[in-house]
Structures are given as C-alpha cells and as structure tokens.
Length: 208
Ligand SMILES: Nc1ncnc2c1ncn2[C@@H]1O[C@H](COP(=O)(O)OP(=O)(O)OP(=O)(O)O)[C@@H](O)[C@H]1O
Ligand SMILES: O=P(O)(O)OC[C@H]1O[C@H](OP(=O)(O)OP(=O)(O)O)[C@H](O)[C@@H]1O
Image (tube, protein in one colour):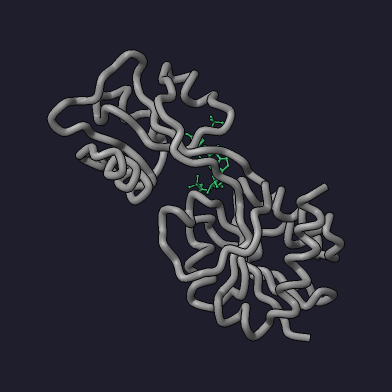
C-alpha cells in the first residue's frame, strides 16, 4: 500500500480536521495532536502528516511534497494553485466580508481597502467596477479603519465579535468559507485508489 503524505493546517482548523479523520475511523497517533513535531507518522494507516501554516498547505500540495491536504477555501481563493479540490469538509466555517466604520461612504477618488486577502479583494472590487487601492496587512485588519488607514477592510468574519468589539459593521458578504480536501494532480492519478477511499470515508463522516 502506498504511503500518503497529508498536509494538515496547524491552528484553528487542526482540531476539527483531526476529529473528522478519527471519526472516519482512522487510527491516528496521539503525538499528532499533542506534540510540536512537524512530521508525524501514522504507521497503522500508512499516513505521514506534515503540520503546516494554513496558508502554506496548497503550496506543499502543488509541489507534490504532500499528496493531499486540508485548506480553507479562503486560501484557495487567494492563491490560484494547481491542485484538485476533492471535498468540502464543512469544517471551520466562516465567511469573507467587507466591513468598516458605520454609516460611512468610501472615498470617492481612491477608496483604500485593508486586507490579508489582496487577490480576493481586488477581484471583488474589480467585478463591481470600482477602482480601489489595496493595502495588504498580515493581521489585526480591523485596526485599519479605526486609525484612518483604510475606508473598508476585506476580512474573515466568524462570530462577528471582532467587528462588534471594535465598533465596526459588515457591509457586503463576499464568499462563504469552509475547509476543503485538496490533492496534487499527479498523486491523485498515481494513488487514486487510496485517495478515493479516504474521500469516501470522509464524505460519509461529513454527511453525519
Ligand atoms: N474567525 C476566523 N478567522 C480566521 N480564519 C478562520 C476563522 N474561522 C475559520 N477560519 C479558517 O481558519 C484558517 C486560518 O486558521 P488560523 O487562524 O489558525 O491561521 P492563520 O490565519 O495563519 O493564523 P495566524 O497567522 O494567526 O497564525 C482560515 O484559512 C479559515 O479558513
Ligand atoms: O468574527 P470573529 O469570530 O471575531 O473572527 C474574525 C476575526 O478572526 C480573525 O483574526 P485572528 O484571530 O486570526 O487574528 P489576526 O487578526 O491576527 O489575523 C479574522 O481576521 C478576524 O479578525
């Protein structure tokens, strides 16, 4: 049986992804969940896990150093990678939206948009025929309108708490987000049987 290398996102998505795999019947070592190791073997299943930053998962899969991976749809929308999207896992649900200070218009000349998702934001405003200046930030995006750096932000909303606590309001929803199972196209061809079996088990688990 071929070994499958799986790129798992550390952080928010990890716990739900781990539970999904265990729920699907896979025997995973405890050290995957409770150690700081970045490469963990699951010999009983012939899996090798690599623990990656969520944004980097599609990079490992595109380059074929991981056969499959779990990535947020936000990451897949932002970086157009050559990977197959096999299954919507339904976990880590959130959405991307525009937000800003309440009752404010965007600057008429060059509205400024702060975001961690420059491609998603550019695409969104271009599709509306609006010309904007994108300001890329790495986090704490909600700061931008509060201190006058931008008119709007394009960011993830989950509970809405961060917007609320900072006195910001949502304007438009851009895309619903969940995590997806992705595969390297060559791995998918060469290890199709193993990957299909995994997809079927996960699909059954997702449907529960
Ligand atoms: N409230 C949320 N904020 C951000 N991402 C969320 C949220 N809810 C679900 N997600 C999903 O989790 C992924 C991000 O996970 P996480 O926050 O652990 O990574 P990160 O953004 O790289 O974090 P950091 O840079 O803070 O380490 C996103 O790609 C998205 O699909
Ligand atoms: O709607 P909520 O449930 O409040 O979640 C949304 C917030 O969570 C994320 O930030 P994160 O916690 O990853 O911190 P960051 O600003 O450093 O990216 C996201 O960028 C929002 O700020």
